[in-house]
Length: 214
Length: 222
Image (cartoon, rainbow over all chains, first blue to last red; front, top):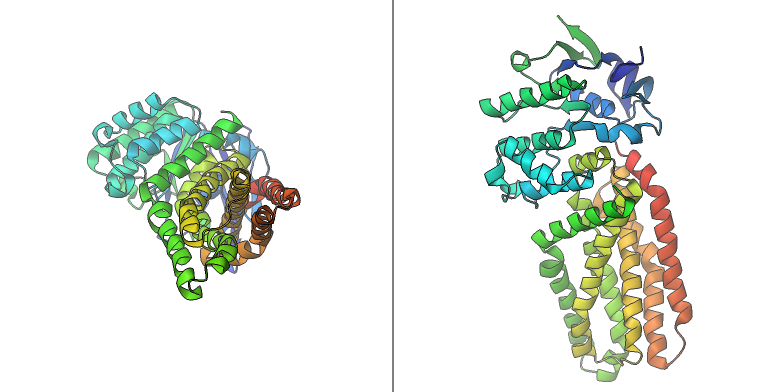
């Protein structure tokens, strides 16, 4: 660890009951880096993202995210610099897309106008009154991307980054990821389609361990 | 963002979700009302007996059907929503207080909605009725606190929410006792201050426990 990494994992492992999800995972993610995370279904990609997002504590190993050591109270201070777009939408189904994004803006201390602007940028300005549970998967993903625009994170984690998105929205993912990287942040994208990943390098989860992809 | 602003936003969100589903107004309240209507049919038309039993039965219905109100929190937030709240840096105690405020408001609405049925069917003596402005909120806050704590516990240990009533019912007994005895005290013209103190003490103990446990429960989620 050189002190400048945005994400640093050293021999991180996770065991849930008798199941080993991760073993001795090593990862370093520096400023301006965009890294792909590959692996088959159930290989632990989402779990690894949740560990990097400081939402889940590893059972072995050590690491730091945005300078905060994983497993310590320091992570509470840096969480608001992380945006994770999971494969399940972080939206309340009964609220409209506009209300959901506005809630994110309000809870992060920003004005509702920022939310409306972000929604427009992801092409949902005319759908802001539509309830989340009446929106398509692609619209939900776009609303999630709007969250990244509102919060301007230093670390952006995108699970199944391109799933359910049309060509325009896939371009949007790249634009938002590039914006984070250009600002000195880092991005990690999970995808089942390596060809679509426009990243600096990729790592793969195989049997719970992380391997470089050549 | 200030602590109280976070509380306000979380409570506002929960009430907005409830206003869309209207579960309390359209499902739970009518069920509770049906229970209050069915009991006189079982007991018969013994008016003095109904008048005497009415307040106690009202609180039992509030407690049991209120369970449905306070368990709604578990259904509102899934893992993705909980992750979002954590990553937004919301203070767990603020999230706890906001959720409690929303749930307590819904329980209070439920209590008030059942009031006219209690009066119409049971004709209870309403001596000292202004005290209801104190008793009803104290019970509602207690149930809101219990529901939010129980929701956090079941989420953190990954158990089914159907087991939550097993946690809540025993802990809600002091609320039931305080509420029934306070109304009985009013009916008989006795002092009710000890029972109000009991209700307040239960609420305070639950609030302190909930605030202290909010962070550990949130971080225990896998």
